[in-house]
Length: 563
Image (cartoon, rainbow, N blue to C red; front, side, top):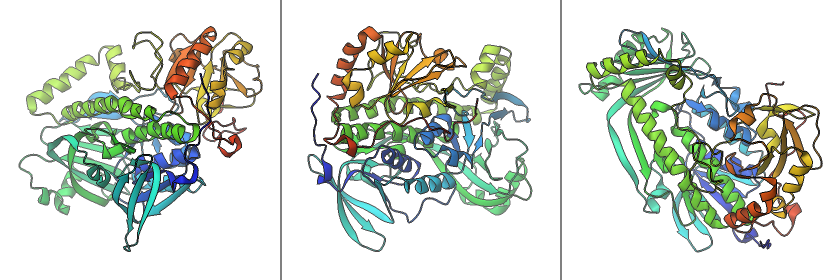
């Protein structure tokens, strides 16, 4: 195994990465790159972040990404955490309840938010990263790839032009993505024939915190409570509806009054949407990578469109950071689409299935579906399957930047998102990720701390700046040196990994399990990992590179609940 230092490019280019588009995906990407110390420019054609409501649901995985960039406390201040859904028959009787109570990744599964608030929070958070610059009111008008770098042509709203260079571009510029068009890439799939009327309300208290789904063939409707007395109604248009007529005040008022909107509600937006299910033919070309709506569009019925984009951001950001800062082989970037494409496709399939439940094709289909769910609800295991959202595709990869351990896919932890329970150190109680830090992690379940430290002493683990965390079931033990020891007092971490005792798990910066090994396999595993990453290296001056890990704070932000 050769560990050769290399110059990743230094000041040869204006930036390491340029992110085009300052929606949730672009802002999350720029914040993650800033967290990793990558020189980043984010370009947005609008003068500010959005003011109109768009996405309204943020899930536990996205909140975990907010935790990774240090913004989760701010975000949670304006979020209604942990809500469910009630699916209603035309007569108003519930036939399916989705009320998830588990928090396997540290946060509730479903949460209501307002996109303008989130975008403003994430833009403000960018100010904390000295390596990130912003250009609002600028549009990317051209892209040229020149071997080892990319040159973007930019134009401001005042007509000023400039060219900027970088090593990589992340195009998070939305469904119409000008950059995708410049690259000659298409967004394949279908546009739904159905249209929906979207009505956003303010000063609109809801009778409960749950989403109400009116599964009525005459007028399918979804009512979603939000923070700060906001609420959204989505009404399906039937074939005889005139879209222009449906947005008239009298028509909208009648629909709201018959679906339980508070009488004093104030309409902040009403518009007609046509839903899409599409995937780009490829998610990258050369050094330009598509993310979010630029490479996939998901119907809104599962609330996963924006959340899928934030997963893209976390996946691509740490890999680019590894290439430009630690000298990883650029070929690892090929794993981005390899890992994310299948999961996005599963989310699109889920959304379409949920759409068919919400909007049955006819009376008979609706009756049979709703009756079937009511009958299945008599079986506790089936009721739990739907109630706890176990139908949602699991965050796992079967291929990509992984080292398989030979176990069957249904049993192995490799490729799965690591659980995030509360753990204890001798100094503090917090969520697991605060102990793991920002970068790679080595999570050990060996009998002794000494065994763990010997098995993780290979130079490679130091070169990738992996944080060492030893897990025990007993309280009162302390770590040693740069190794932290934590107590899995709830047993959730042991239960969430496949037979962890005696093994060491390598955790990626996006918190997926890269691989695992027994102490006696440490050198062989390190050699395989080195080949996978392509001889990772430090910059010539280690002090000049921001460490990819962080110390456990004395009072961890967002570490509640305290134990």
